[in-house]
Length: 166
Image (cartoon, rainbow, N blue to C red; front, top):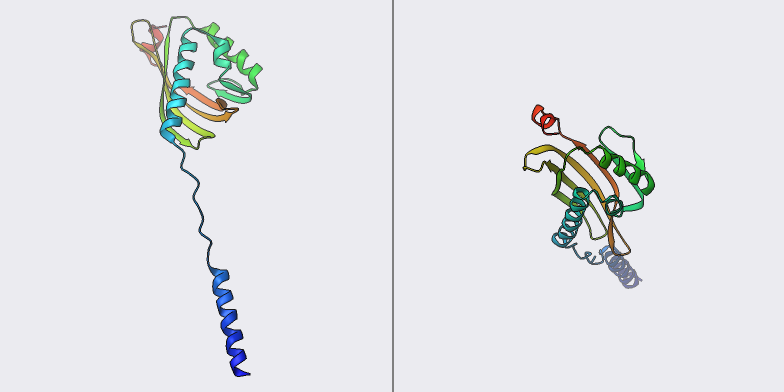
């Protein structure tokens, strides 16, 4: 009887030990963030070109239908139609031929959704800086295309030099 108890106890210990072993977890492949950053940079360059050309349709095309945009001193714009109205109003206010550039400072996420932190610089036709600003954008890949689903931006403080260049 003692021999059976020993084998039962040994079997239970082996079963308990086996149950406590963690299965080997395979890590998901790491996102190729250099590739993602290059894709986002290409979109930002196209966005800047559209902004410089005052091409509202192209700019609005970078947004998802359900996007939300939050800009400096404006109410929240919800949906593509509201964003289009906001972009049109912004373009109508421009008084000088300005050149906009975007610089991605940080990008984090994965191959389906990333958050971008960036800087905006706007210069006049002679290259003088009119103003600078910063932004955050959340991009999501939908049907193979990166679209902005959320963005927020604001301008840096206006200096007297900025006012004379407008």
